[in-house]
Image 1 (cartoon, rainbow, N blue to C red):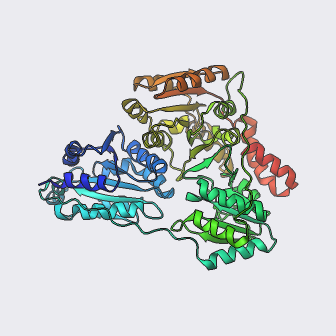
Image 2: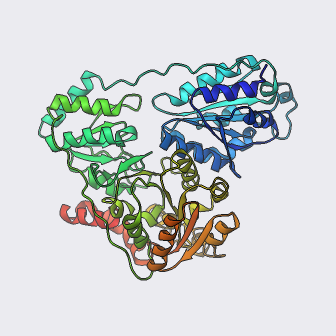
Image 3: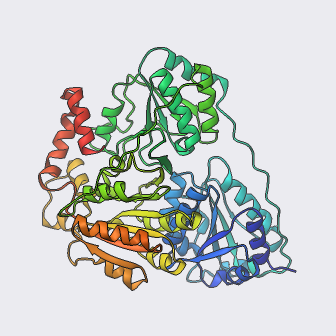
Length: 552
């Protein structure tokens, strides 16, 4: 008769969960041993819990089904919390298994004892459960899987006491049925139809699964028929884009620019998206970015089927047969000369193969990435949904395991790279086809920008030193090589192109360290707050041109 861990493993696999990203400890050893009992389960070791949780997130975004994690007690969960936060914000399904002390050991308050449930609820508000017996374990697991896979996807945390894991008499459970997502109701469709038919300026804001091809095409038909504008949320969980797909402008990160984008609209229709809010609160500036004269309507919620909802709206408007506008093919051309962040983005747009996956955590260095890759062959892009940096490299691990036949590019800022640099080791161990490009500008550049924007007093030497990572200089190519990843440092566009071509010719893990100046530095950074403050008083054609220049 199987023990609890063996029965749990069978329950996971029978539900379609085939990958477990692990960083185990003593309390999880029976689960670790049970991995050998189930050939259908792939176990991927991470050297830090934040890599395991971020990899599970990236895997689910591309596989459209959850992976499992295996974390060690409350401290291990704490180490993995930031990337579980990103998964929660992205509505990504993750079955988060956290080990615990044996039930009878808890009362002794051993060194690693903690309140796991309280920690887990921050990232897993819809499901946190401690399995109390071997007999109940697999039913608990089946319910956790069902919750994770529901609409919207979410992190479901199953806490696994050691004695529940090693106890005899485990009984695998069959997967629970999943409810079908429904289209928007008639009343919501009618409200949105009336808004569009009013002749007033209307925009659709798409998020979540509305940024996949079926929903994008339906939205593009509506736009072609009725003249509405399409926007994507600022940080999409996953967006399908490139030549042959509808082009769509993302809402800007900078609140002032987002306000500019939305200022001309009377109606904003939310499709699997929330109304835009400022990323942070700023003195004297609004947090809610929908203009006072603009009415927000919800067509479909994350619990509903975005594509079916948009198709229903298209039918109601008579737009089902409209010809959608599609992105034309177009590469930006190869860059030359001394390397800049913009030239890295240009090289990506020129050289990336069809069906690539881009994991974008390039922060300020990637300001031109969207524009430079817009006409490239179709691809998927993953972004920083929850704002907790350190997502990019782990996401790339998960995406590469979910899609082994697709090249993965991770574009990462140097500050954020160091949060989860251990992901490189996992890339090497698993021989993943990931090319990581680290923008080494030796600065937390975005924080330098924010220092100016929040209206902090003039920063002195001590303040500025907290945002400066130039001393000591980090050699990312050397770090990569020390972990088994081919690494190279480049300073010119020509060197970058050579490195990217080499990576494409030799599938496997590569790291290209791009030494670049800050994209927003010196005069640019000083002028930016003034410019943003001046936008409302400038002529609209000029503000649009400035927006395109700052953050296309």
